[in-house]
Length: 592
Ligand code: ARG
Image 1: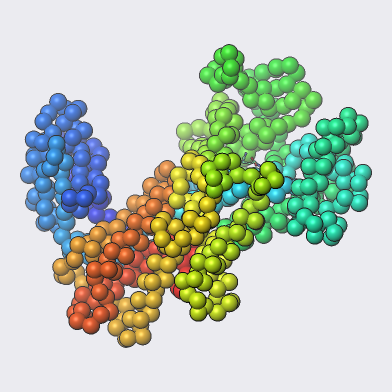
Image 2: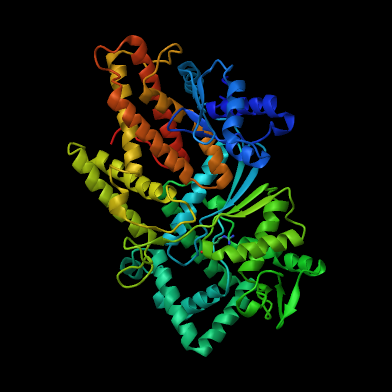
């Protein structure tokens, strides 16, 4: 059993805090030492600057005092005051090597379970039944998958909730149209052949039904009666609804499997799942005096959520006809996640355009007493994916772009670049690699962008072997795997860290990067931003490339100690890349 490894940055923090205590007293010992990586030393601590301002002292002088307290640390090789009052700190090679050895010996790479005891309820993906999954659902699906993996790896209990849109008045319309036009059946093989899939057929049917709904008051009325029948549990109507839902959910599942995300059919907790509780939710809010009447509807008002002309914007909980909307359902989701799932952290990964909705839901849940300080509710908002031209993503005909088509495109382009790089690949291997490179490229492009930012879906850039792409990271992984294979073939063994060795600058830089994996994962858990991990892995791959260019591993003339140490660096880099990619849901192949 290897216990967790304390990163150097933490060790330095602790030392600076101890120095703060000896120089300034115990009440400043918990000050954040502001330790960062530095270009001029291994690390820098910036605390003297911020603290001096607060204490009205000279920052350089304060830094000097801290320096005097720190120079006794034998594992530090230099502590210097620089600039206006930075403390530049470098550590011994042995301090780095000792940590790397402990990480290599541990299957978890020394990463502690910092999220143990947390229950994270993650609401993500949320596609809509009878509609094609589109590029908008891609973001939530991939970000949610990465966060589920990272939080799970850090020891949180993760509950995945796929809030599929499977309920509402639109189903009355759809089912009514289906009953009136049996020839338009989406199960009809001819219709499916024309539209690429049963769900596409449903999607098309939905749009036709919508047209009739808008054009014909008589149809509109029949559709509305059909909704009532659905809600009342009319057998024939419910059967049609169930069939449509099942067909769509199977199609979503196919996309999830292709993407390699963790979601399963069991994770679906669609809008209909919360149906039985909607009346309770309304009653409870009414009893607690939170609901108000407005034009016959039941709504919640907020003092500071206001629209044009400073008019308060209400959240619509129950319509005047008794129907429930999206907000009522989400009030039920938050109540359920707290009371039944005992979530300590509720994460809704949904389009930024729904931020007011979630603000209202969270506030209402707080007023109702469901949401307390024991639980954190977050809307992890995500931006929009635009087309390659930076404009809203549309097909040439102006329609929404099908997710499946985008993935096809990415895999095809990946196939081209892989085939070009390695023309000797057998067709089966090429197919397999094209799949994991194409899907990995899409995922990495998504996950290397801050989730709140908009970005352009540019397949050509995504599948490049150069630059910050999934393909580059996968390729780096294969290069290291190949070095290790060669070492195996040459009988050199996997190597191990040699604690007394003097390290080259590129070895130190790589070693320091490897030591930061766990802290990076913690940052992802705090900010719910997988791009921090994506960026870290890119930095790691670059550090490896620099190392490998200047530090031969298997070449003749390299001493056994140095070679063993370099092989251990290779192996730890490979393992860290593989684990990191895995946490992003990206495959780390042995060859490509
Ligand atoms: N179905 C919704 C949409 O397509 C997303 C659901 C998000 N989750 C939630 N609990 N509201 O916009």
